[in-house]
Image (cartoon, rainbow, N blue to C red; front, top):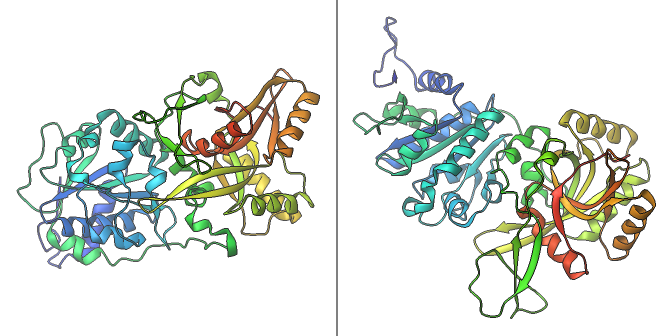
Length: 442
């Protein structure tokens, strides 16, 4: 344990500044993937956590989450009050990227709001999900910072999966089996919280409104890590629709806008082949996120005038805005590559050719798509693409190892993201199956 209670550095006779202590705190967290800042004065704990997040974000990507509720210093980072957050992620199955807020002026820094009644949500004691989440941050080299009350029952759960404790004051309890990292004095958070963040985040252009899009939240080669921190899929992928009047829902409800009295329930019922996950062409280039499908299609058409665009598609996704609002976005996506480096090289080529303006475009991690046809001859695949084009769906084909084709539509970071487009495809007479994207685009 590193003590922060004293006010003078050892053997120097000089006062130790808050910034010096913060630097020591940041150094102590290197090599650690998750920490829990605990205290009884929660606003103080939040200020220290914010200071740590800003400092650590200068050389790694960081997410800071509120497990206490109403921690104003955390929400001040990204603006706005609490909305759906960690409570909904664990209780309702939302993904982290559905609730995460990017911090302006700080590339790779995100806020995870608390959500409703986070301090009394029993689902937050789900050890398996915390284990996956913390391992994900470790694999990606990121840092998860959580702020919780000292006596919160979630603290030993987090500690049991490798999260280290940071105490903001002396005399706080340390659960059995949980490792303490630092005991910090009250001055550290207050003095250091004003440290500036390094780096800037590019703004959205015109009508794209990309700041509201999950794709831009996760976009860019440097942002792929965040998408990969999502829970591994359960493997259930085929979307089978069923309408049951008055039935109590057991799965997510999607309201049919054409018939407000009808609820359509979609159950994920088929397991993804594990062999496909290892060979998925998970990387693509997102050109933009628009609020109309026509705008996304127009972007692809313009880019195609100066460059052949492999696996060009439009992915329709729904993102949450506030606690009740749902916004639909249409993402113009190109390509299917095994590695982010290959996607980066392709993006450079697009920019050099003029297909994409310099500074536009972002490499994204989108391993899933809607499978419209499988094991199809090239001529048949071309016909399938034309059929779906006539219906307004921009499909594409990827060649498999055996020379046959798979026809896909869209490209998604998670199974849940694919549901809005799967609903649309089913209404057009298709049988949508969410599958890993595999194969070559040319």
